[in-house]
Amino acid sequence: MKVKLIPRKNPQKRDAAPKYYAEPQYEGTIDIDFIARQIAGRSSLTAGDIKNVLSNFLEEMPTYMLLGRSVKLNELGTFRISFSSEGAAEESAFKTSMIKGLKIIFTPDVTMKSRIKDGITYEVMRSKKADGGEPENPFE
Image 1 (cartoon, rainbow, N blue to C red):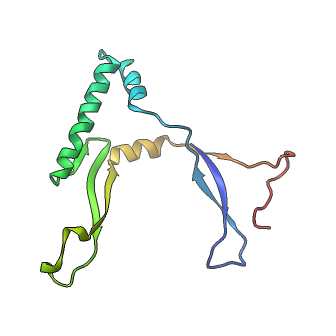
Image 2 (image 1 turned 45 degrees about the vertical axis):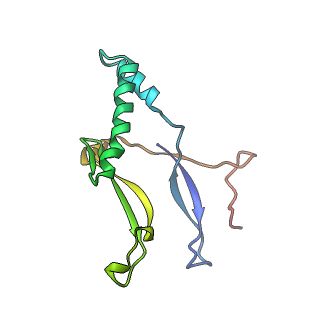
Image 3 (image 1 turned 90 degrees about the vertical axis):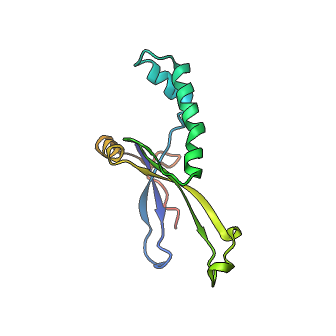
Protein backbone atom coordinates (compact mmCIF):
# COMPACT_ATOMS: atom_id res chain seq x y z
CA MET A 1 0.00 0.00 0.00
CA LYS A 2 1.27 3.43 -0.88
CA VAL A 3 1.45 5.95 1.93
CA LYS A 4 1.94 9.69 1.78
CA LEU A 5 3.78 11.51 4.55
CA ILE A 6 1.80 14.44 5.92
CA PRO A 7 3.48 17.03 8.19
CA ARG A 8 1.40 17.98 11.21
CA LYS A 9 2.10 20.26 14.13
CA ASN A 10 0.98 19.33 17.62
CA PRO A 11 -1.62 21.99 18.53
CA GLN A 12 -0.65 21.62 22.20
CA LYS A 13 3.04 22.25 21.40
CA ARG A 14 2.93 25.09 18.88
CA ASP A 15 6.68 25.75 19.10
CA ALA A 16 7.66 22.13 18.47
CA ALA A 17 8.78 21.04 15.02
CA PRO A 18 6.16 19.25 12.94
CA LYS A 19 6.24 15.49 12.68
CA TYR A 20 5.44 13.47 9.57
CA TYR A 21 2.60 10.97 9.76
CA ALA A 22 1.69 8.26 7.26
CA GLU A 23 -1.64 8.50 5.46
CA PRO A 24 -2.92 5.74 3.16
CA GLN A 25 -3.16 6.61 -0.54
CA TYR A 26 -6.08 4.90 -2.22
CA GLU A 27 -5.89 4.08 -5.89
CA GLY A 28 -9.51 3.91 -6.94
CA THR A 29 -12.52 1.81 -6.11
CA ILE A 30 -13.42 -1.75 -7.03
CA ASP A 31 -17.13 -2.42 -7.50
CA ILE A 32 -19.34 -5.52 -7.49
CA ASP A 33 -19.16 -5.83 -11.30
CA PHE A 34 -15.36 -6.07 -11.21
CA ILE A 35 -15.33 -8.54 -8.31
CA ALA A 36 -18.02 -10.67 -10.01
CA ARG A 37 -15.86 -10.90 -13.17
CA GLN A 38 -12.81 -11.84 -11.09
CA ILE A 39 -14.70 -14.60 -9.25
CA ALA A 40 -16.26 -15.86 -12.50
CA GLY A 41 -12.78 -16.38 -13.88
CA ARG A 42 -12.12 -18.88 -11.07
CA SER A 43 -15.46 -20.69 -11.03
CA SER A 44 -18.10 -22.34 -13.20
CA LEU A 45 -20.49 -19.44 -12.53
CA THR A 46 -20.90 -16.45 -14.80
CA ALA A 47 -20.23 -12.89 -13.66
CA GLY A 48 -24.00 -12.34 -13.92
CA ASP A 49 -24.71 -15.28 -11.58
CA ILE A 50 -22.25 -13.96 -9.02
CA LYS A 51 -23.51 -10.39 -9.28
CA ASN A 52 -27.08 -11.66 -8.86
CA VAL A 53 -26.19 -13.49 -5.64
CA LEU A 54 -24.28 -10.51 -4.25
CA SER A 55 -27.06 -8.07 -5.18
CA ASN A 56 -29.72 -10.27 -3.57
CA PHE A 57 -27.58 -10.62 -0.47
CA LEU A 58 -27.20 -6.83 -0.23
CA GLU A 59 -30.99 -6.48 -0.58
CA GLU A 60 -31.59 -8.87 2.33
CA MET A 61 -28.88 -7.67 4.69
CA PRO A 62 -30.67 -4.47 5.90
CA THR A 63 -33.82 -6.47 6.68
CA TYR A 64 -32.03 -8.49 9.36
CA MET A 65 -30.14 -5.49 10.70
CA LEU A 66 -33.46 -3.64 11.09
CA LEU A 67 -34.74 -6.64 13.08
CA GLY A 68 -31.91 -6.06 15.58
CA ARG A 69 -29.57 -8.74 14.27
CA SER A 70 -25.87 -8.45 13.57
CA VAL A 71 -25.03 -9.86 10.16
CA LYS A 72 -21.88 -11.97 10.20
CA LEU A 73 -20.12 -12.81 6.97
CA ASN A 74 -17.81 -15.61 7.98
CA GLU A 75 -14.15 -14.70 7.46
CA LEU A 76 -15.09 -11.16 6.36
CA GLY A 77 -16.67 -9.55 9.42
CA THR A 78 -19.85 -8.46 11.12
CA PHE A 79 -22.19 -5.55 10.36
CA ARG A 80 -24.46 -4.03 12.99
CA ILE A 81 -26.50 -0.89 13.61
CA SER A 82 -25.35 1.60 16.22
CA PHE A 83 -26.59 5.00 17.36
CA SER A 84 -26.44 7.43 20.24
CA SER A 85 -29.15 9.47 21.91
CA GLU A 86 -29.79 12.49 24.04
CA GLY A 87 -30.40 11.70 27.68
CA ALA A 88 -33.72 11.97 29.46
CA ALA A 89 -34.12 12.66 33.17
CA GLU A 90 -36.82 10.00 33.42
CA GLU A 91 -37.68 6.96 31.33
CA SER A 92 -41.14 8.35 30.58
CA ALA A 93 -39.57 11.54 29.17
CA PHE A 94 -37.56 9.70 26.54
CA LYS A 95 -38.74 10.12 22.93
CA THR A 96 -37.41 8.22 19.93
CA SER A 97 -36.71 11.61 18.30
CA MET A 98 -33.86 11.88 20.83
CA ILE A 99 -32.01 9.10 18.98
CA LYS A 100 -29.22 10.55 16.83
CA GLY A 101 -26.15 9.51 14.88
CA LEU A 102 -27.28 6.31 13.18
CA LYS A 103 -24.25 4.34 12.01
CA ILE A 104 -23.54 1.00 10.45
CA ILE A 105 -20.56 -0.54 12.21
CA PHE A 106 -18.34 -3.08 10.46
CA THR A 107 -16.04 -5.20 12.60
CA PRO A 108 -13.60 -7.24 10.53
CA ASP A 109 -13.23 -10.94 11.30
CA VAL A 110 -9.94 -12.13 12.80
CA THR A 111 -9.27 -14.11 9.60
CA MET A 112 -9.68 -11.02 7.40
CA LYS A 113 -7.51 -8.89 9.68
CA SER A 114 -4.81 -11.55 9.64
CA ARG A 115 -4.87 -11.85 5.84
CA ILE A 116 -4.45 -8.08 5.48
CA LYS A 117 -1.83 -7.81 8.24
CA ASP A 118 0.20 -10.71 6.87
CA GLY A 119 0.03 -9.46 3.27
CA ILE A 120 0.51 -5.72 3.58
CA THR A 121 3.66 -3.92 2.55
CA TYR A 122 4.19 -0.16 2.57
CA GLU A 123 5.69 2.12 -0.05
CA VAL A 124 6.35 5.70 1.06
CA MET A 125 5.56 8.31 -1.59
CA ARG A 126 7.93 11.23 -0.99
CA SER A 127 7.13 14.74 -2.16
CA LYS A 128 9.56 16.47 -4.51
CA LYS A 129 10.00 20.13 -5.29
CA ALA A 130 9.39 21.19 -8.88
CA ASP A 131 13.17 21.40 -9.43
CA GLY A 132 13.63 17.83 -8.16
CA GLY A 133 15.18 18.92 -4.84
CA GLU A 134 14.06 18.21 -1.33
CA PRO A 135 10.45 19.03 -0.44
CA GLU A 136 9.73 22.41 1.10
CA ASN A 137 8.78 22.63 4.75
CA PRO A 138 5.15 23.88 4.73
CA PHE A 139 5.59 25.30 8.26
CA GLU A 140 8.36 27.79 7.47
